Image: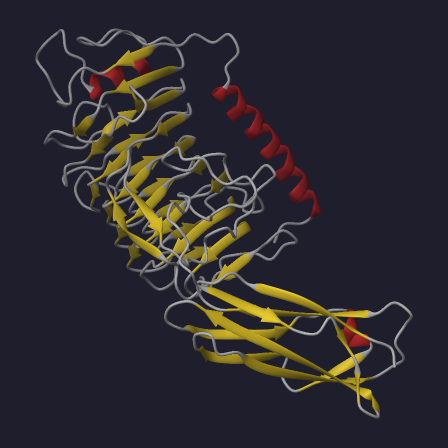
Amino acid sequence: MMGHDDFQRFGIRVAFLSFVVGALLLPAGAPAASISVTTVEDSSPSATKCTFRQAVSAAQTDTAVAGCAEGDGNDTILLGEGTYETAPGLSEDGNLSGDFDVLGSDALVIKPRSSGDRVTISGGDRNRVIQHLGTGLLSLENLTVTRGRENASGFESGFGGGVYSDGPLQLSGVTVFDNSSGIAGGGVYASGGLEAVNSTFTQNSSGGSGGGIKVAGSELSTMRSITIARNSAATGGAGLSVDSVSSNESIPAIVRLSNVLLADNTGTNECEADEYLEARLLMTTAKLGPRVDCIESGPDDNIVRISDSGLGTLDTNGQTPTLELEPGSPAIRTGNVGGELGCPSVDQLGHSRRRDSCDIGALRFSGSFPFRSLRLSGPKRMQPLGNKRSLYVAKLKTLFSGSGQATNGLLCLKPGAWKKVVRVRGKLCRQLPKLDKDISKVTAFKFVRKSALKNRPTTVRFSLSAPRFEKRVIRTRLKRP
């Protein structure tokens, strides 16, 4: 664990990193060029055409390449609608063949030419898709990375099937799916810091760890309003794996999660982290990793464990493939709204999010709510029972309305100051295995007074929860006899 001095040094490093990334995002007065790709081919003998590979080279070398305009500092590559697939060839590090190699120190943005253009960058089941070996910020926006393959043999390292990045990487509105790696990072391997927002990572696999995402190194990474689902790994971190790889082990890899849906990933565990991983709001369907239980506890940590994510099938009708939330998903309207790590104003497909509530994950819920509700009611004040002035009883009524049943309900007495005044008879939580339609169920909690009640009534809170329903909380007060 880090000591006080280590945290101070870490704070300085994070502040410096934030400054550098901010400078890359908004380079005051820095030159820039927009390079428009004119063909989906990977290689073209024509001097008038501009391929994606040639555009990357033009941007990184600030020279004209074939039909691509010359780059000029921090550049943007614009891709028309279509699939840009790597041609057969050996993977190397000079952007000549194999995966698309991004080099140099200038920032580079890769995005669709027009709003709504459906752009896919593919490894063709033969190569990794993108390799970022430069020191400048690489930003991918509103596109799909798919069919990347990076085996641990020959010229292939086995790291990062979809994207491998040594430098700072930013993903916004991106779907990374159906990629694989031999060792780590089936979808993404990032060792230079990763910022992901409104993005989906699904159906990726790793022969080792990090089926969806592998974060390594000691840089700050932030993941906000993303979905990591249905990935797999042979060892740990089927969805997300975090490793500290640093010469100074007192400065660990820091990953901050907010409104992240980590669900239905297959492996030893869904998430593993060897050092420090902060969760403002993480919703997950499975047991977490054995290393620090994936999340190190802290005052802002908020982990919601669920049994059913309520995710639908992969929808390919939008600009990028996404996993929609089905009616009744626990991710609906349960996210953090405000603050630096709150929900963005729009989701992955550009749809406006609700201002008063937020859906967890990359996509907002776009359907209509079926008539299914779970209600909890009880007395506003608890009176002493009969002549036994020290005994109180709270009778709580649960009622399910709608189609089907509500199952695996849990009615709990929440901790509070009431413990100083009364003690409860029986368990603090009561199981409600099945709630049938329109049939109310009454559950009684009995309290025995330990000390005199103060003039101000003591508040007692109860919560009712069930998979795929919003939690219900009510309050009652102990009245003085």
